[in-house]
Every structure is written in C-alpha cells, then in structure tokens.
Image (cartoon, rainbow, N blue to C red; front, side, top):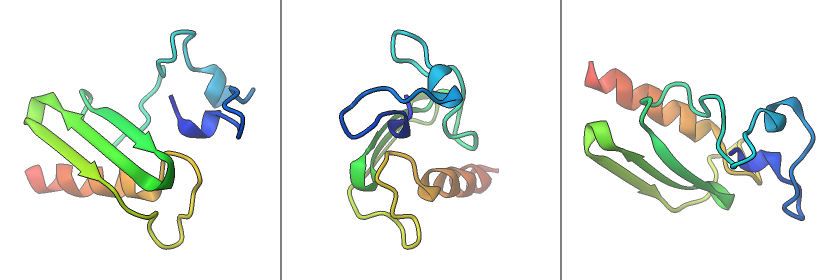
Length: 92
C-alpha cells in the first residue's frame, strides 16, 4: 500500500486512493504503472527502495536521499516512474 496513505501516527488516511486498498493491506491498482506487472516493491521513507522482478531475475536496492525537487516524506517518488520507464525502454 502507498506510504502516503498513512499519517504521522501510522493511521490510514480517509482518501479515495487509500480506500482502494483491501482490508488485508494489498493495493488494488498499479502503484508504478511503468514497472513490470510482477514487480514486488518495498518503498521506504527517505526514498529507500527494494525492487524484485521475478520475470527478469532482477533485484534492485537503493539507499539514498530523495532526488532533488522531490523531497517527499513518503515512500513513492518521481524516481519510481522514471527508473522503470528507462529500464523497460532499454529492454526493447
């Protein structure tokens, strides 16, 4: 589920996007539309990332600061979309 769905106390926010999450914590939509369908992702505070794509035998770990101009305090950033757009374009 999107990290932006939680407030500073860890409580679920009552937005439409957050309500789209199932009771078991899974997300009903694609969080990173440019990524492969079998992506498993751990997206953490401060733009920490772990991506696993079984179909590509791929694991990516990122430990760093948010990209300039994207100082989000939640788990998603512009990096998610840009990274997968470029990786998938390189496969073609």
